[in-house]
Image (tube, rainbow, N blue to C red; front, side, top):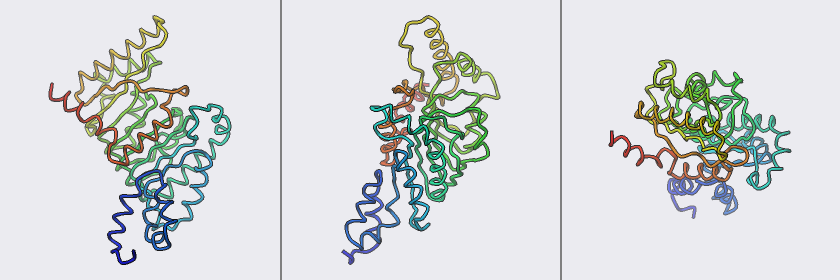
Length: 306
């Protein structure tokens, strides 16, 4: 085994360690030689799920020597996998939310020089716009969970290398333009969700075709917008609101060739996508099938028809 060139082993480790971290942990048990030579790749891809893992990983990664902290892709959730099947799990996690956000900050700070893909999942309102730590080579970010829009924390943290941003919770156009996009000056692909609860937001979508202050920046190439779910109840007021938002979005799509309307997201009782779906989305991304590539045929079809 030790006669095999180290370059070959490096290639094997690099291809093998593309999962939630299971392969990296398993390599430690194979042999002393494999344990030592695989160290730079063990944490290449990691999923940290649940408050116990979050705190434990923060403690562990801080003491790993810098040359072995090569976390390139990470999924971080403050909530356990069985959250959707056992909503009662949310109550004890709520009391730990501050500790969870503190652990998130510690983890991101420890891996900031290496991480390129980050997906986060927080049911509770996060106290920062995108992330609480500057990540100089971050290229892809997906954020699941609501934002405390009154917060000013994180407004000075820019992500200059960020190319693709996916926000699955709704975000108003005004907040998007004046807060979120200011932090990502090199963004090319954006995916957001349209609110289904605000007539004011519908007016903002409409005004994006006329208001120069709300026009999408030129560096954006593709903007995907999940349309709101149709109201389950046939209340005239709710249907009217939904119709107004849809009309505004369709008008925006016709006015700007970069806009691609997508189907509504399937939401759970917390008005978020299920946690397993979020994990699956991250898995597709790290294995070469990210969300923006899945939409490539739709983009080609739309633009060739124009």
